[in-house]
Length: 268
Image (cartoon, rainbow, N blue to C red; front, top):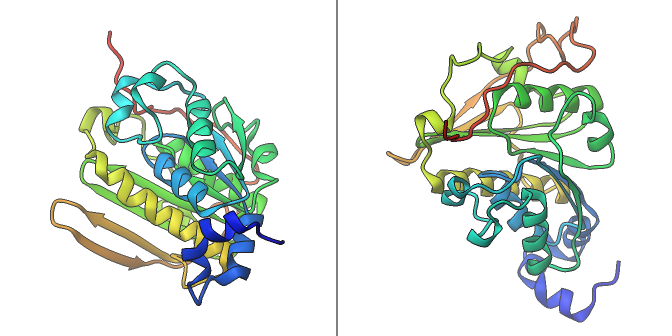
C-alpha cells in the first residue's frame, strides 16, 4: 500500500524501527483485530492499536459505561456514563486515528455469535473479566483456528499469554472454570486501576508483534506480575495431550455457555 505523507509522519517512529519499517507498518495497516470487552483491558488495547494504525478494529461489549468503570477503563470519559461502551470506544478510536475502520458489536460474546464474529479477524484479544467467557473465547479460537491473547487482572496482579494454533491453550493450563463464587470478582476483591493499563499494553504489544512477525510471542509461557512488589515472572507450560479441546482425544467439539459471575458493582 502507498502511505500518504501524513501517514508516513504519523507512523514514523514505527517505520524507523529496523524490525518494523514500512513493510511492518503495512502489515499493521492491513491487520484485523477483534477486542472482546471494552473495559479495563480492552481500553488500553484499543487505544494503542488505534494509535498504531491497525486497519480494522472490532470491539464487542454488551454493557454501558458505569461510573465505577472510570477508575481503570481509560477509553471512557465522565460524559460517557450510560452510553454503550462500544460507541464510547469507537468515538475515541476515531479521534485518535480516523483511518482505522471500527466494527462495533453491542452484544455479549456467546456461543451463538462467537464463530460468526471471530471469523473475519486475524487476531483476537481477550479483555473480559469472567472465567466462563475466557474459556468460551479459548474454545471458540481453538475450534476456529484463531490466535488470541489471554489477559486477566485482580487486586494488584495480572497474567497473560498468547495462543497460536498448535500451541498450549487456556485449558492446557487451567482445564475448566472454577465453581461459581469460588473466586472473587474485582467488584468483590477490588483492582488497582493502573494494573489494567500495565497488562493491556502488554497484550497490545503482543498483537503488534503477531501482525508484524516481530520478536518472540508469549506462546507456551504464562507471564504474571504483582504490582505491589513489581515482580514479574514467566512460567513455561506445554500443550497438554489430555487437554479436553486441543489434546489428542478432544471431548469439546462445540461451544457451551456456563454460569457467569460478572465484575460489576450493583446497588441493591
